[in-house]
Length: 137
Image (tube, rainbow, N blue to C red; front, side, top):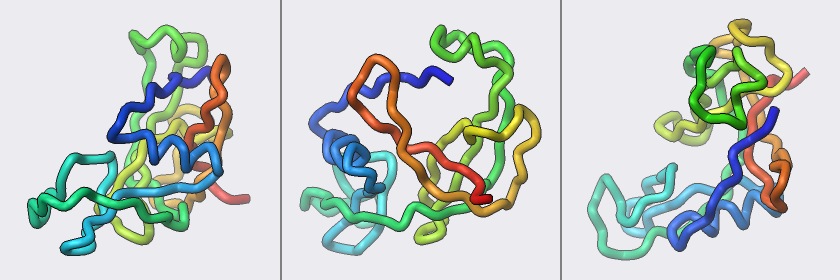
């Protein structure tokens, strides 16, 4: 399935750089140790003015929920419709959620609650790898 090409900015560039090294990272507040994803300017929990650092996480989680996209306005996705969009919650911090189309899972057949692991997929037309999630075999 064609994927959107990320456009890294000052805030999220460390995330995308880590993906290219096949590592999953999230932000971590040095003041209160709260983990954050997606990237933020400051901690939501303690509002510390200190910049958020980055922490590598294991990349294991569970499927929290999903829905099926049948009529996307995003051209790169239209040829593969219908497709899943699943919410994956990290085992290390169930408050951190990622989105994935779950490669290899037919539309509408998502095993809610199933364990998943991160993999890094290339994006056609780019040198960027992006995180996707799969149900281990």
